[in-house]
Every structure is written in structure tokens, then in C-alpha cells.
Image (cartoon, rainbow over all chains, first blue to last red; front, side, top):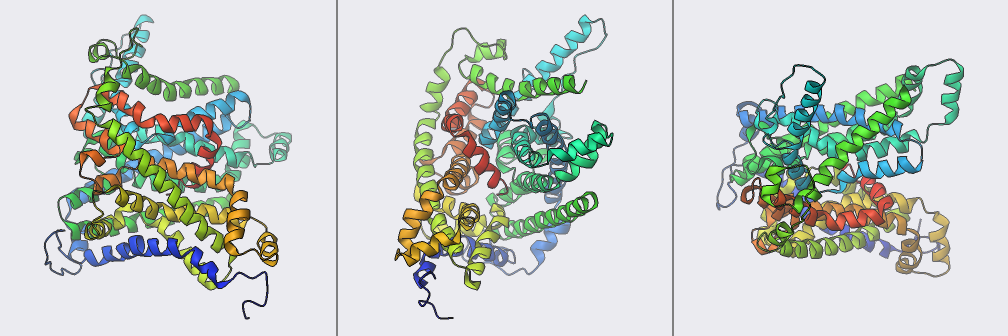
Length: 307
Length: 269
């Protein structure tokens, strides 16, 4: 078909409209991404003029010989798991509690969403204070609860937890800070999803004699499948890039107990192992893609079975 | 029972969100002695020494200025470049448009860590390291894919007849874009602008990678520096948090709807 005959058809100059976006994207994003592949096969340190091609050696090292990378991978998995469970469950419950557009609900939704807009460095500092073992909020609340129980005549001692100072559990506490920041955001996604559920479905279920729990399992859950898919995808991506939060809570370089993949790659990079860091970053990308893929398969199956 | 549970849950969660935030504000106007003596009670004699310190010797005054200039420029340019592309992608249905769209959208799936090292090398070659222009450029590049994604989705929902009628009336593409599509896309542009504002204002990674001079630091980078400097000087840390968050908070109060929309649409980034 020849252009120009149809007066409604766009002129060829329309292609100029995406030229700036494409040019910037190709030069500063796409090509560097491909270059990372090239770097990953070298031992370049970032400043020397010469470097050696080392083939797949970097990848072998990432996958088999790097205990720091494996530590970061495990931490990241723990972090992701806690955030996925706590954040998804709590945001769904809060969404159900605040589904109606009453004045109070709208106000509370706005409040719960608020931490999302803060920078992760700010969130990290707030939670460093919460977790401060000497005079932080968490231990303050614990000791207040204990004295309450003691007044009731129970013989309990106030536990003082060390939170971030305890290497075995630090990453879980960081995960809770991440939840605090993003539960409100995911709640909003669920509210939007739940408000689309036709009321008749609930009414029909109630007529059939379904109790609250049954209504939740057979009506609410299947109907939230699309929102759930979005929440899981967002939460996963955010958990892999919780870079600022970790640096804010743990410093540079982060302690091993709180190191996750994104911070690990950054540390490798600052140690001038450009080639090796590039290899790590590609493995990182594959890990994210694999996790996302598995989740999508699982969730679409869930949606099919129930809906 | 269910109603009681709901009430209890909401009261508890409201406390979980509000108490730490309130303590930050209270703590920012305390002296360190007051902080140690009673970390949770509000002080009766507010003291703004913390703010004076972070804005002056803490470097947040300069950082605030840098963040404002860099964010405003980045958001404006990203919006212009992305909406131009989105318009063309909504208007043209051809294999070329499909390729351009897919390539741009694929960018959303690439984590920052995957290309940050070659990007830094490239910026070094171009003498863009440690410059504010360099930060603006990288901000535009990394948020373009999401911005194009949101705006294209919106502009594709506009009726095709609109474009065609304008073309038949003799309006060029530029005029259709500027006088018809942009005014109609204002809600979507506002949500995208807010999303970009939050992303650019809060970003830590690229300033950390690209900026060395203290006088070019952005707010999150300067704030992160407090980690070592003021380790557990909470009044100072809290003053820093308030300063770094203030524009976001003010904007959130007035433009809440766009925050929710924009940050939900872009949350996958």
C-alpha cells in the first residue's frame, strides 16, 4: 500500500517522534547491556589498558567457587521469601479491611501508602532506630509489654533482641523494614482488584450458605488472581533491587549477614573486578528471570484451577 | 467478632506506620541528650540545631539544590522524549513500531546492575562522570522504558478517529501531538511525572556510581554519608530524613491520586 494516498495515514516523519527515545536507549542502555556480556568474558579491572579473555572462567567462579556470592544469593532468597509472604498476606488482609470507600478507609489507605514514597535510605535510617538495641523502638515496645505482663502478675523477663547485630537473623529484620515500606503500595493494588469483584458473587455465595471463610476461599481468592499476579511480580522485583535499603542499614560495603545479590555485585565492582562483576550481574539477571518465570507458571495454574 | 478483629488490626497497623514516622519528626527537634534520656516522648523545647547542622556542614542544603535541579530537568526531559515516542507508537501500527516498542519495553526487564558497569565506562569516556548533566542523562535513559510503557498504553486507548480526523483536517503530526494528544493525556502525564519524580528524587545507585565531588551529591547520597559520620546521632539523621522527604510529602498531600496511580503503574521497575 502506498503512503500518502490516504489523508488519515501518518506521514513518514512520524518516525522522527521515536528517534530521540530510541537513540538514547540504544546508545546508553542496549549497547552497554550487550557490552556486559563482552566484559563478563574478561578479567578487566576497569582501568588497565589491557586485559585477558578468560572465557567462561568468571561464570564458573560465580557458580561454584564464590562463597560470598552464594551467601548473597541465600540472603536474597530469605529476604524474598519473608517479604513475599508477610507483604502479600498483610496487604491482602488490609485491602479487605479497607475495601469500602468510606472516609476512614480512604484516609487509612493514604496513610498506609505513605512510606512507599520515602527514599529507601530514609526508610533504612528509620528502621535502624527501630532496631537500635539500646534505646530503639522495638525493644522499647517489648519492655513496655513485659512490664504490662508483670503488672498482671506474670513472671516474665524483658527480652532485649539485637536485631541487625545478630548475624543469623539480620536479613529477616531488614525484610520486615522492606514490608513496612511497601505493604501499603501492594494493598492499593489489591483494593483496585477487589473492588472489581461483582457484589452478586458474594451475595450468591452467602445465599448458598457459605461462611466468611468459604466466601474468602471460593470467591475472594480466585477473583484476586490477577491482582495477586501483579503483587507477586512487583514484590519479587523490588526484593531483588533492595539495594538502597541494605546500604542504608548496613553501610558500604554491607556486612555479610545483610549482603544480597545487588549489593554483592556493587561491591565486586568497587573492588575493580569489572569483568567478574559483569559476569555476576548476568547471573543475577538470569536468576530474576527464572524466579519470575516459575512464579508466573505457578500463578497462572492457580488462576485456572479456581477460576 | 470479625468487626472487632478488623478494628484491632487497623488500630495496630496505624500505630505501626504512624509511630515511627512521628518519632522521626519528634526526634528531629531534640538534642542528643534528650534523645538518649527519652527516645519516644516529644520534647517540650524544640531545638532546630539538627536542621542547621544537616543543612550546613552536613551538606544537605547543597544536596537539596542539586536534587531539585537534577530531578526537575530529568522529569521534564523524560516526559517530553517518552510522550513523543508514545504518540508515534500509538499512531503507527507497523512492524517497525512493534519492534521499537518491544525493544524499549524489554528495557524494563533489565536490572540496573546488569548494565551499570559498561554505562559507567561509557560516561567516563564521554567526560560525563561527576557531572549533573551525566546524572540527568542516566535518569532519562533508565526510566524511559517505563514512561513509554505507561504513556503508550494511555495514548492507545484514545480513539483512533481522533488522529485521523485531525490528519484529514490538515493538521501535521506535531500539531496533533501538541494540541490534541497532550491535552487529552494530561492525567496520564501527571501520574507518569509523579512516578518519575519519586524515582529520580530518591535514586541512590547512579549518584553513588557517578558522583565523587561532595558539592554535586544528591540528597540520598548525602544522607547515606551520614551513616559513617553521625552513626547514631539520631536527631541529625532524623532532621536529614525530614529535609530529604519534604518535597515528596508536600506533593503527596496535594496530588495523592497521581502518586497512587503513577507508583502502581511503575512499581515493576
